[in-house]
Length: 63
Image (cartoon, rainbow, N blue to C red):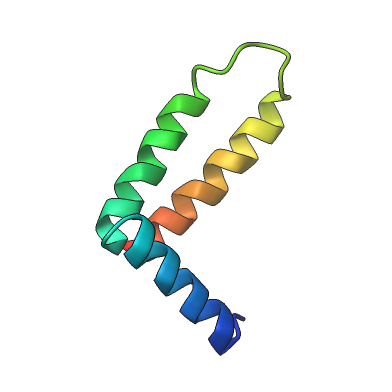
């Protein structure tokens, strides 16, 4: 569970960096798309999938 200070930091990150949760979610979707084009053998397939899953879950929370 996030502490109040962490929630405030997340809110500031969203507001200052992206303007809105929806815009940050769009950027996370773009990152997920870019993960599909990583060169082979840079990361394992499982590492890429785990990262994409984390980003997708965070994006869903922001919507």
